[in-house]
Image 1 (cartoon, rainbow, N blue to C red):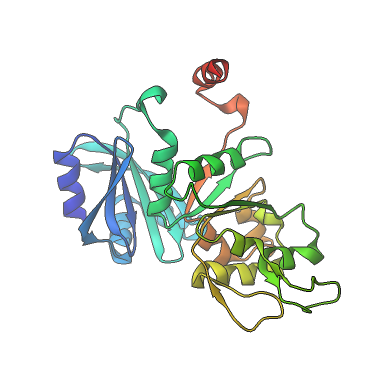
Image 2: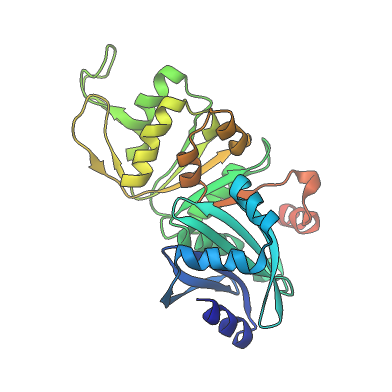
Amino acid sequence: MFEKLEDLAKNNKKISDFHIRAGSPLAFRQTGEIIMVQEVMVTAQDLKDLLSMYCNEGELEKFETTHELDTAITLSGLRFRANFYKTINGPACVCRRVESKIPDMDQFNLPQALYDIVDFHRGLVLVTGPTGSGKEVLANYLHENSNRKEEPFVAVNCAAIPENLIESELFGYENGAFTGARAKGKIGLIAQANGGILFLDEIGDMPINLQARLLRVLAEKEVMRIGSSKTKHIDIRVICASHRNLRDLVEAGEFREDLYYRVAGITFTMPTLRERKDLKWLINRILAK
């Protein structure tokens, strides 16, 4: 795998970043498009070797604790910034070329490029950032520029639904499942998103007892209504968002660690307006409308 990385970096100057994930083909991005090298399947050992090659003992210990590490690597004389992170299948890495020139926004289809990255990570995305930073806007952009744009986009605010109702809202229920249930039952929000994208906003506020059920949905692609013994297969992409630090919630025992690694296939952090570096472009875009 490493030899192929070196060869690609040396012979293709248009590559802006590599995507290295255990269990998936080696992939790289070129002018916004994700290209997979099908003949090179990345293994967990490949990632461990890459970590050992470029990280010292202290950095490796830090990675085991924080599950994330940024470091610099060199491929064929070119410098890359490598972001290592852990997934349920083991280590993964995104290597971004330091010398790469970022295209002008007017010439770069940013939503499509983002969705290409999301699709490569099997559609499991975590968007973090303070309230009002545009987490749901990003989720909508990904939907509108995906091959699922004609399918449902179902947004659920986990903090806004009362704890005693959130299970029935998400999973639905059969006739007579509980007192006060509708006579014909109800289709849950997860099933309503079938074929499209499910956006779980403020997932950090989801009750811990429901997190196990959500984990099964994500792992098995099946959902079961309350009061039913039958499961239904679903095909969804899931985008989660939270203004809270999920790592801190895991440490506090308020969020399942296995669910965290499942939803954080790739993480986008939304900056506040005062932290954005593209204010000129943003202002011009708003004025153009």
